[in-house]
Image 1 (cartoon, rainbow, N blue to C red):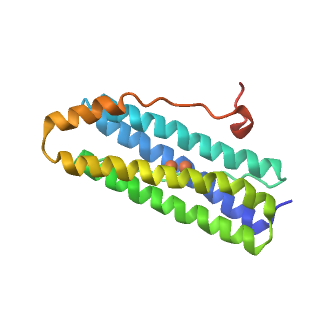
Image 2 (image 1 turned 60 degrees about the horizontal axis):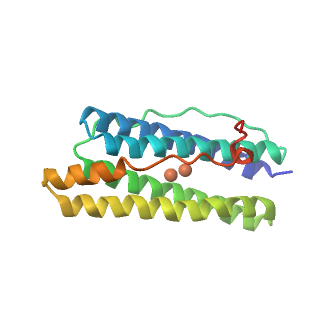
Length: 175
Ligand SMILES: [Fe+2]
Ligand SMILES: [Fe+2]
């Protein structure tokens, strides 16, 4: 069992995670157009992770007997000025998602819903990681400034990022 209030807010979180995937896909498109394939790869991995987050909430809601209601996903921003702008927006977006997760945690505590609270702890840790990663790259971009060689070095570094599929139980994916 899950309360109607938590059911509603988790449905909204599914929407936010899919929006994140959509936003990162838009950022991937920007970097592909710039021929910065390492940066594009970084956002391709991000996109897959956000889809996994959405599916994790989706499966949890089903698992606890809640009703999944898929909501409309807004169009993301499609024009960006610079890699630095992209990462400052990505960081701001992750901070927004962290607040959203904390809000669900608060409600789960208020309702003494310990299973939802336990489920959310993974996301609390994940958000800390997400914010740290975006901030780290943003700081590097600020150091790089207008140095094209620095940008290409960072691009080569980001090309190394590999997507790690979650355990099947988390997303309901077939192993
Ligand atoms: Fe996420
Ligand atoms: Fe994220």
